[in-house]
Image (cartoon, rainbow, N blue to C red):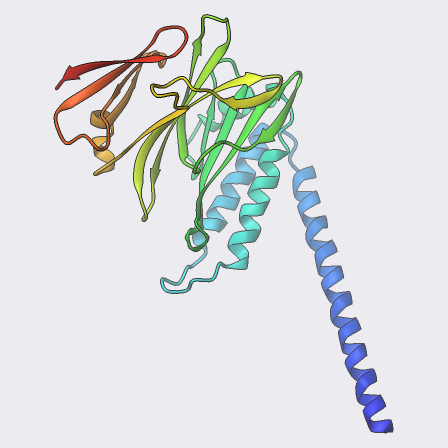
Length: 263
């Protein structure tokens, strides 16, 4: 009987020790993340910190037939997310773009012409989860900036075009490409800012808020979907159309209307 009691005590002690260790580790991790955020004093340091995290992310070895996700991948992607979402002013967005343009990076950042919308995109390397690409949009709310999600599947956004509508609203076209082992395509999404929120708007034919096309290869981009000028004209070939018929979408101040042309 005493032996059983002693064994039970040892088990309880081990469980309590393990629980304490987990709590301490969690606190240390949160403290480390907090220190990391506090140590970023300006946009230049933010870009440098992101660059260093992406170096770590890209150095993680991934076994080809291992269908589990590395804890390091999850942790680094979470750190990247936290740093980006800590941006909180319109001025920071403008300064970020200036720093971003100074060199190449392992992530993409695009800013709308009026500086009200910024979008970060990156490859997470967490392919087995279906989350190959991550997007975080930062939008202006009065004098502040807040993170938000985008509609549809994540994609690598390369440009933001801005048009003025007949209602004197700004229409934003987010242009991106997905080039992953599972699929490759190009896409345009249309949004407006309403009351401090990003809202998808039906600006394309057939009351669509986005258009996309499947690509045979990345070098065929201009042939399939090409945005001209400030975004007011789009040369677009339907993905299901095997003929040489193409469609030019032209913005009329309210929506895009379709015209047919031949190659």
